[in-house]
Length: 146
Image (cartoon, rainbow, N blue to C red; front, side, top):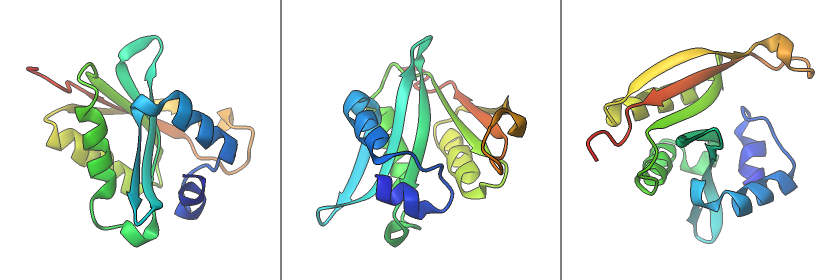
């Protein structure tokens, strides 16, 4: 996962230790795609402690060799299918990350859900220079009728 995040060119890279802990402690809300024994994609998320019906997607990435095959969409759909208690999905996306914006907009559309975008963290909140503002994408109305 660390390698895929590093090579993505868009994700904030965390330590390899952080990815190992996330995969261990949040295994129920993490999915890893493996091809020929190698990790080729992942989604890391967690249920928000103050809102346990809300799944926050921390990171999602696909190895360059697998792009264009809807792997990220399939990972998200599989994760949601395994979490019937989830009514809302949240993630943050910077304004310049068009691919992630399309991914989550199409996810909302596929699931017949509402998709709202609001400010969460302004650029000034980040101590590291060059980190863009993070916009909160809220996809609600998931698992309607189940």
